[in-house]
Every structure is written in structure tokens, then in C-alpha cells.
Length: 120
Image 1: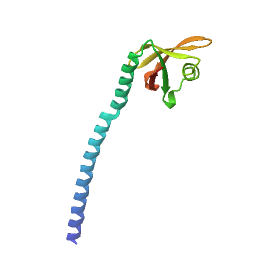
Image 2 (image 1 turned 45 degrees about the vertical axis):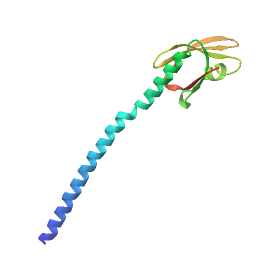
Image 3 (image 1 turned 90 degrees about the vertical axis):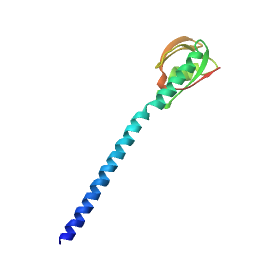
Image 4 (image 1 turned 180 degrees about the vertical axis):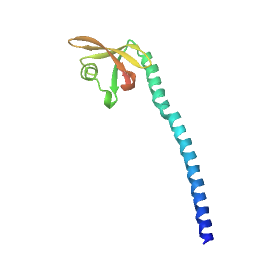
């Protein structure tokens, strides 16, 4: 009967050691994930802002991410009857003048929502 208790004690100790090593491994993976989580988005947004700075004063075509669609830019500025002109660029914002056949208006757009910028 004592041997059964020893066997269960050894199995319990092995299970505890295995669980604690898994927790350490999981915590290291979570730390690595949190370190790299925002860097990809930040780098792409930063490179997009640098590209937009080159296009200040130029007419461009803007494409947005799905959740950030802008009605005026898509329906007026990106067509053959109108245009988008970049007026100013910040790390987080893009100031655009939208010229339409009826007039023009300025809009402040989040850089986070812009997927690509193309010159015309």
C-alpha cells in the first residue's frame, strides 16, 4: 500500500513540474507577442506618412481600409470628375482637399484608415 502512495506522489510531483514549466513558457510567449503587437502597424503607418509627405500639394488617389471608408473621397475625389490634393501630413492625420465639380472641401482623415496612396 505504501508503494501506491509513493507512485502517486511521484506522478503528482512530475505533473506539478510540467505545469510550472508550461506556465513559464507561456508567459515568455505572451511577452514576445506584446512586444511585437503594435510594431507592424506603427511601422507601416509611419512609412505611409513618409510617403504622403512626398505627395503634399499633389493630386492623389486614396484607398481606405474597410472600416474607415470615406464617402466624399471615394465618390468625388477618386473619380475622373474630381481630385484629392494632400495639403498637410502628420504622423496620425492627413489633411486632404477634395475638389468636385460643385466646389471643394477639406477633410481631416486618420492615417490609420488609409491603406494606400497613389499619384495621378
